[in-house]
Image 1 (tube, one colour):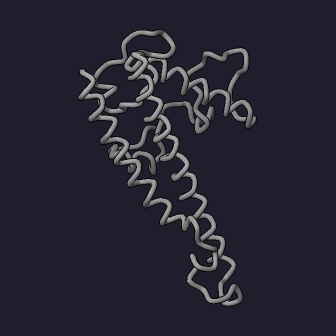
Image 2 (cartoon, helix red, strand yellow):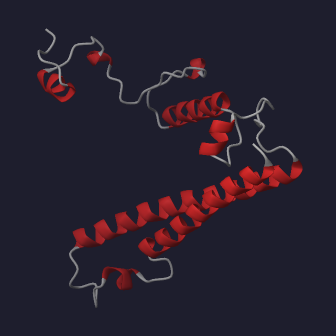
Image 3 (cartoon, helix red, strand yellow):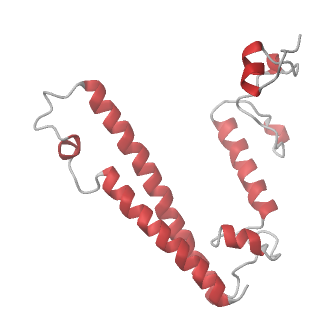
Length: 172
């Protein structure tokens, strides 16, 4: 991939994420008071449940906005790597990042394997800090699943699960 193609990919990604940031700022009501957002003239007429729902929706929008802004920061960092000549090389192993990965995520810092490894280790850390499943001695474990139920590990499906998965008869 040449510099022009990379610039085109980064520019398209930046345009998309700037548009997303603008939309999310509007949805989240950046610069507006909560009263303006609710459309209520005063807080007396608003049901507490409605206020809670609006607060939750605004917090979700703020989280999405933070994510979109962080992608813009990553795009800026990718442009800097392009200038320094390190764009397209994994920050972990220094091997080239596959073109198909860069086309999908032009701001990628790592190859697929090292990004996956990082994400698994982050999942392991989050699960162990929160007191969920995981073995600190097995930090390399990649099979941590917080939804795993050891009592349901017999590979059989309940009637409800069978119906959901289109299986004709549930296993005994």
